Length: 442
Image: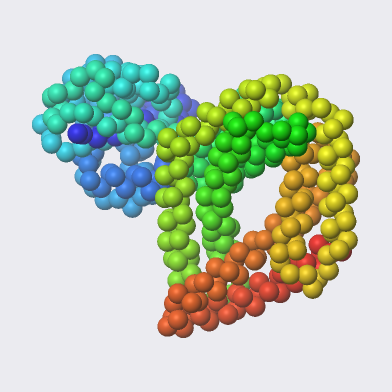
């Protein structure tokens, strides 16, 4: 079994018309692409493989930039034969490799795409710039290379590593957010970037679409006063997805909070903060492994297929507002809004955290039904969104408080950590008091 890593050069500059194709350097976008790629944990594989690169300037700058951002120090073989656009030339080059080790090739299209079509046909549709592909080949020597001998084990494009770039790419094809078909499409589009974990915003958006779909299924069951078996399976699938991703998202938010604390806490707390961040990173990694195991499993595939079939039976892709009885939906929204206002009126600053959490759940259910029905006035929705933000901040503070107490118990002899935990707990308690007061006065 061999592994072949393929990397297409990043975006290059065409401005200088005096340069040959061979001489063109990377442009600003290309330099951003290699930074995102270099910061990805999977490129650590470069430390254990032979590195081969086209002698084109843009190819060499791509590999050197990735290695610099990844802090990898390894020898690179620059081979003019890899400056080719012919797939069969790459096939012949690979077959002639005497090395027993795995390889990386940094090269060009259409040669790279053609090579994949030769080794693993119909497994990917395109090979954009700065894309990283890992192939698993069922051979023991490179001379044994044949068609259909490989499978794509990893496929990473730059837009899967940066959410802002992902959104820019999506703008041209984005449909209405208010259809079940679009929600399901977005859930699947966010799945692989969420698994990579490079930009936490991917997981956040992945969870949003999972909750939207779960809310739609629950509301459909309420309106129809019945629930088919496939709808029950689909809801349990989404509940499991959300439950497994909850701790990862909580720890991402906590890590951002700790990073922000560095700017306003004195240098005497730096050691304790670093210890806390290390503990957060270790715990997050463990939860991420569990989440990714599920997202990459047959259980997930089965649940997703059931979900898709279930939505089809609910007459997707027509607008949700059209497929559900609008007058009943409006009644649900109004009823939930009244219940929320009543519960808010019963809150006071002395209520425990659980009481505020129940209000948050009610608010989320209301917003889910509002997404489907668009019943409430814009000003009302603006206030509800602000309330949701405050309740979310309170929930984050509660979770962070629990983590701090947990870490303090786990490291009883670490004076620096215990000192910063004490300060942060004090700050979080004060933050919770302020948030509760704002919520009660909303």
